[in-house]
Image (tube, helix red, strand yellow):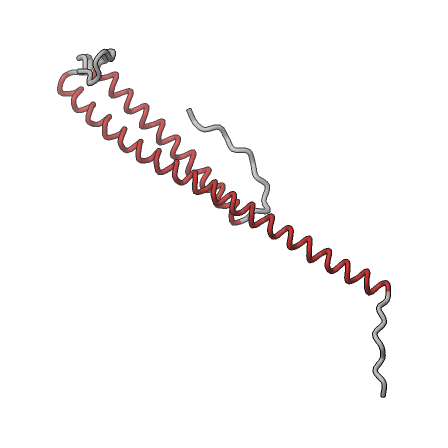
Length: 140
């Protein structure tokens, strides 16, 4: 018995082209999502580094504020603190307490901002097809 001969028809070729087009578009989309995910992962890593630096600076400023607060209670808050830099303006101990407390609070705000940005970009790295909201301004 003879085997039937395969005869390609127009509809078969159109179906094959449609299947190839769908496969190609899915491949392109997957590559795009992977690149987007990598970009978001890099942004999250950058915010992680900035958060760690801000937390370290905040801890250092808290320590300095505590140290200056002790000196202010010992010498009096209105006493002029000795300057370590020649020609620098003289300030009271209370000024330096406020200065270091304000810097510590600012660094804590900056660290919280970068923690929120890190969480945002880690989520976007996991789900790269989600839309990206604009970043809020960094705290002053």
